[in-house]
Amino acid sequence: MGNKKGSRRRFGAVRQYRSGRWTASYLGTDGQEHRSPETFATKTDAEIWLSQVEADLSRGDWRDPVVGAVNFGEYAAEWVEDREISPTTEELYRRLLRLHLLPTFGGQDLDQITPPKVRAWRTERKKATGATTVAKSYRLLKAILETAADDELIRRNPCRIKGAGAEKPGERPIATVAQIDALADAMGPRWRAFVLLATYGPMRPEELAELRRSDVALTAEEAEELFGPEDEPGAEPLLGVWVRRAAPELTNGRRVIGDPKSKAGKRFIVLPAFLEKDLRRHLDWYAQEGPDGLLFVGERGAPFRRSTFGRKWRRALVVAGLPKGFRLYDTRHTGHNISTRSGATLKDTMVRAGQSSEKAAMIYQHSDVERQREVAAGIDARVRTARLRASGADLVRRP
Image (cartoon, rainbow, N blue to C red; front, side, top):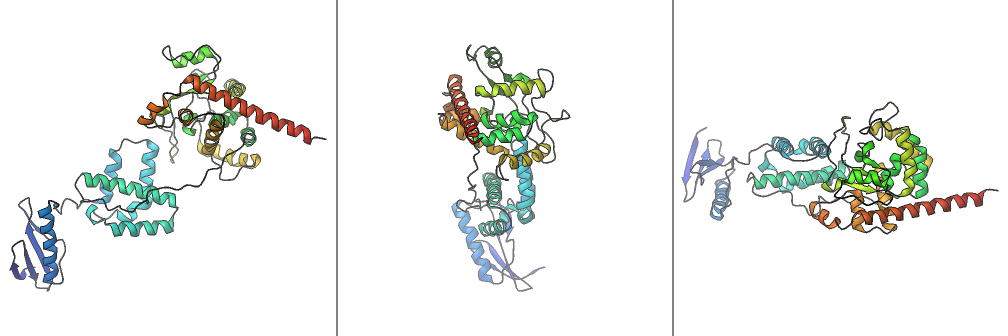
């Protein structure tokens, strides 16, 4: 449509269409003419818009309006693809995008996502799903848009809600030694050692799923072979496992074998001595044959699967008197608690758990094998004492 009349200004120009609405245009720093993305009801509104553009140009804040016209859904997909993240984290990001971000922002361009829209989205999500999921989704949205700002596709990240990405999970339950023993018994002999290692290791489920016969040291000589000549721990009796790999299971059932979750995840864990009997029996009865055989397999020889294990787990919780929501990861939390009560420092506990960033890894180097041996001995003594007391109490109650 042609313009009805125009008006020349010191900066830019405004024109009125036959419809009565107004448009504005100006020359950008790229030497190209740019037109306002929308029309205005009055000439004054068009001039105000031009004044804002002129101010941006004088401050050096002007950006080509076409640059921000990048679809959020497409940009987010590329953003995830470019990340160097674990398969489980990638799966989480794609699920959060599909369920919580793309339904709202998927059809919008990056420069169309404003702080009010982000606040409205968060309010709606808080009504529809849990606070933890909303926090995770907000962090992901903020990270994607922060990269867009770094790429100069948007002027500023619109995610500006203080504390919106913080999670406030409830306190996880801690089991007693007696409850862990009952849980291990209820899981049956094939999975007893799995529960005990998850607690007193303590290892992540995906690390346990990929343990091999060759990762287990039942004697000092075997431990020296695992450590190698540079780091051999000595000739004293030593029981432990070497965590070298992890096999997280995705929601589609695919096992992804790779490195542990962090650099500190590759570690030798000195175990309390009371686990020796259970480990020897498990190796004799249930582990796959051959030095590279998996330590934990199902009745038909298949690797650890969450679905099959989960059914047994839920039944075992009832027998052990543990709450319905007690997770396998809560055995790990229980193990941390027992370690600290047995004299382990934060450094010791973090080494056993395989938790650290590169900076933290330097700090944890002071917790050497000898210190880990002391921690394992403390756990051994504490568990033996608890079992002895429980045994004595049973004798007292008997007629």
